[in-house]
Image (cartoon, rainbow, N blue to C red; front, side, top):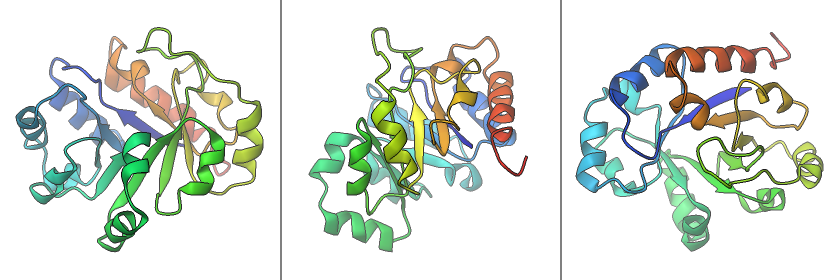
Length: 203
C-alpha cells in the first residue's frame, strides 16, 4: 500500500524541514492543505522547496499557484469537484496534471473518470478532528472489490489499525494526525511506511 501524508491544517514548528525529511525518507505524495492560510503564507511555504520536492506536492487550495510553481498535482474537495466541469477536468489531464479528490461514499467512485485516485473516509475515528467518527465499512468493501480505481483510506489511520486496510481493499492510506501529533513525525512516518510495505504482496 502507498502512504500519503496530509499537512497539518495549522502551522507546525519547523514544518518545512520536517516535510523535507519526510521526502528524504521516501514520501512521494504530500497533500498541502491549509484551509486558513493566506495566499502569501502558501507561497512562502512552497518557495522553500526545490523542483524535485514540488513535484511530490498536491495543492488543495489556490490552484492557480501551479503557474508560479512546478506543481502538477491538484486535489479537489467534494464541493469543488461538483462545481468543476468535465471539460475543465479533461483539459487538466491533457496538460499532464495528476488529479485527486475526496469522497465519503464508495458509490461515487463511478463518477471519477478524470481522477487518478481518491480519499475515502472517515475509515476510523479521526485523530485530529474531535467528533469525526468512522462510518460503516459494509458498503465500502464490495464497492472497492469491484473497482480497480485507487482509493486511499483517510480518517484515524495510525499504526494500530493501518494493517486492517488491505482487507478492506484500500490501495493506500492518507495520514494526518498520526504524523503531526507524534512526538517524532519522521520516525512515525518511517514506521507507518514499513507497515504499508508489509501489506504489499511482493514484500
